[in-house]
Image (cartoon, rainbow over all chains, first blue to last red; front, side, top):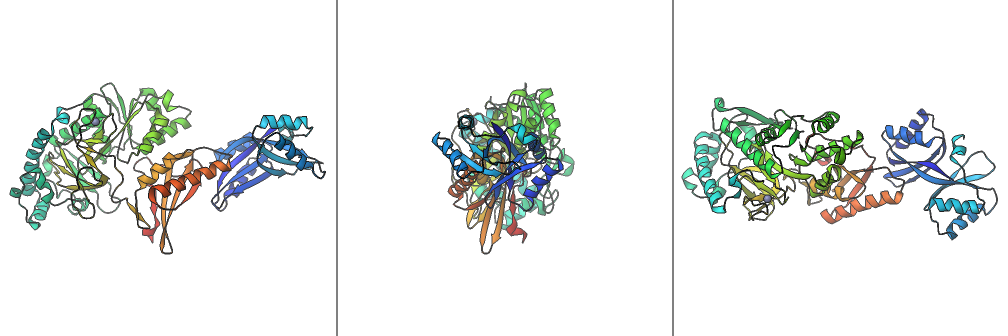
Length: 142
Length: 433
Ligand SMILES: [Zn+2]
């Protein structure tokens, strides 16, 4: 199952990241995970939040360039080699990973956010391998 | 369609009209305009020395500074009572330049604009919305009278209140838009923000754009938002010469036809003043040969273009000037390289994923100039690869075009300044220090 991630373009200016977080806070959006890929001039902020549509809308309304992207949140059991197995499974199916970052929630498993090509097929492969992904409903109540 | 028979005359006949009017103008100016007489006297030239069109190059130039020095009416050749209209350009520094029109001048102006509007596709069936600022600026009223003369329905909506502009367009069925290219693009953007697709929901089929450079890339951008079938022509003029109506493109978009029975064009080297041959780029100099109130001789326009006298596919035989490639004033010298903002604009518009807005910043860093170009993303993205591609693409295209390394700053959509009149996109911080 896929969930929606919020992607925000930010210029690397003093306080720009803070402005994004302030907008989300003012609108009671809860951030579950955050990743920033950047150069010296600009960055892409990626967020997993409890209400992605709302987050995108309030950011757009505040003048930020934001959009929703479908990603997978894969549960990774606390067993050594678990992540390696998952990545292996995807690699063997010729699915490439564009980026990934961690998501920490208070559950027994760790989770990672993964953006791949061919998301639908990636889901099927994970299902077949009995690897759990999180649903939008699960995210919404966090 | 061609408006006037003077647009298709053989060369000899055009030149005959030009010579008659030119000699008459020189004599009249020498007699009536004291500051120009002084200039001629200083160079030791008398009206009798001027016998052919070739002798034009013996005459002194007139510059904007001359207009300022003789503010307000010092270069006029008629008494004030003869004036029907006064316009002025808002000088950002110092006094404005003042221009005046007699009844005869108004008729010539209307005729000239009718010709260029007709060349740009206007007919009596058009609903023409004029989104130039009305007032002291000549653009709006010039187009207004010319289009009215053709029989078009005029919507004098001026600039500003863009949502209302779109509402008029939709409700009145506007088919012809008069605006600066940047405002025309801005209006398309506003229409989209209002949930309209200008291509489908509006009926604008003709764009007469002027008072700002129209690059090919900008024209493509106009087509992209207003529709591929829109005929977008640029036209040229300036208040000192008359206003719009000096020249304009026809449907072949291969240079702007100059109304040669009213204006004689020359191209000069802006540094030496030497007249350059046909086809060479340089500063446009215009002599008005049928103006009563303000008959400027060899007026330096500061605009960079080139001329061709080849007959056009449209049937017109008049001289054509290429779309401007910049202002000799706007030219930036960056690390010794001549840079026109229009060149940078062309690059910005050619890169997929960028909007048409940009800002150029030139600074001094140590002993070297630093060029920064701020560009605006056209849409949100989640792809870092895409951002890198855009940045690198602008950088490498600028390097190829100018031979300069520039720093590229990507900005969020809708963050750079929008302009409703002439766009101010250059910040030269070297001058401010
Ligand atoms: Zn033509």
